[in-house]
Length: 93
Image 1: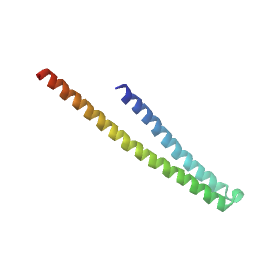
Image 2: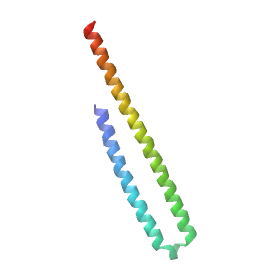
Image 3: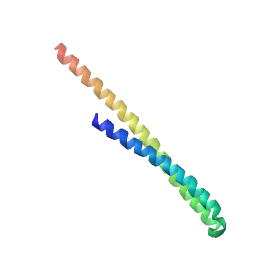
Image 4: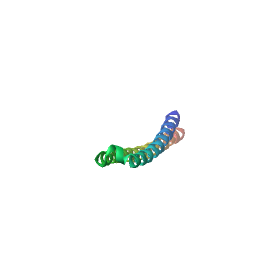
């Protein structure tokens, strides 16, 4: 029970980080568009590519974490079911 609470709290933190990262990415791309004359087109393209790559990694990790969380919830549910079966068998025997 307490572990599930910790996982939920951590997940909420991950969600906040994800949306904050999305906002920063958008802000960075806007800033790069306005500084095109000062920095140079090649540098801006590299920065865009790098931020896109980092964001793809973030999305991949988010999907992986979601799958792991789903699997953990399923495992927790199965563990509870097994414990209930064990209690029922002990009361019958």
